Image (cartoon, rainbow, N blue to C red):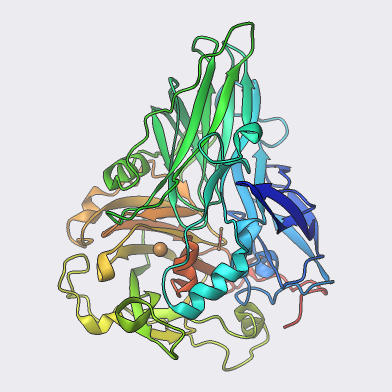
Length: 534
Ligand code: C2O
Ligand code: CU
């Protein structure tokens, strides 16, 4: 993979963007279940960068995982890094993206993982597989937007367009000629491999006149279900079957940004592309599918709660039943005092974000190296509990002092093979919003979710321990919670964070260290010789 700048024109103007091999979106990678791919990442751009394989387990090998200053120092301009993409039982769709500052805005692509040789999809073989990647376009330089929003302490500017496969679509200026077109044949079924690579929004997606059948998410199969729309979080992937069973014509597929903050005006929020049936006919002008309103939290949550693991003989569920480690993590938007006059965010403060009131600070040397080489002083290993459990996390009575979190680099240490349950609790500080939480190095079972405060007596009684979905990203609904479980059997250093880019920039992330086991095959593998230096 060669990182380099390339000129692109959209929305009536041109600029240079950072790409992989000159392509935007980047190249599609193909693998089979269980493969290890060797990827040489060359940085031909002018800024530091890292590449992350989102959702790949990377068993015992966090060295190639990619998050800057968590598992590696960035790849400097003019240098390269040989990375291993190690798959285990992932099957379906994942993706890769830059994992340093906001470079992932343009440096990203789809990763397709087919069944292992000699095995097959748990559904009839589709006529074709179509990657559908949702993205965003800023007319100005993305790095400038980041610099400005970090300095001002306020919200970043919204993008100028949402994209389907790199194209804004017919509703945006100067875009009609390049609208993505998918040609289908009546009677056939297509597998859409959907990725949400958008920076700061969950997205609704729908196709006019067509029902969708959801068959997978985050490279794990689910019990198929039909739906008129989907909600997809940044970071999440969803596989859907599209049956071309309508009158031959042109139909819009469309994606609309979802954001639970009421009354925010997003300007252009809907991107389109066209499903075009083969044949001889005069097409009518396509109409938009009906999509939920851009602030419809119930529509988003209802869809997100529908997933069930396929849970058949070939795709067994291994949800840990005897939990040995319980964690409650709160996700909040906060403020911190401004340092200088260029900053003028909310309440004269700057925005911040936190997990258990810790706003995560990236260290100068990556945590993995510090852990592996016993370098003292890079991080602390006493990640705290929330200051008190007696709060109404989602009411309007949160103490104002919680607006100011502590800025720290603390990790949470997990013993090898402990069975972990984490309750991810959103809080109503500054109003609350959905948080798509992503864990590196693991997929987890989502055993429960709901609005309001997690109730430790009542909610566990309603857990799904039979066929919970197996995901790497879960949207914690606005002022609500989700409970996840996994077995800590992948030693290493693993980042967990909100996949809304502005939230992680504000500090909404934390790091787990999973310790080695005693056995030979239970330890961290050694680093490769060409690890980038800080
Ligand atoms: Cu999709 Cu930490 O990343
Ligand atoms: Cu968030």
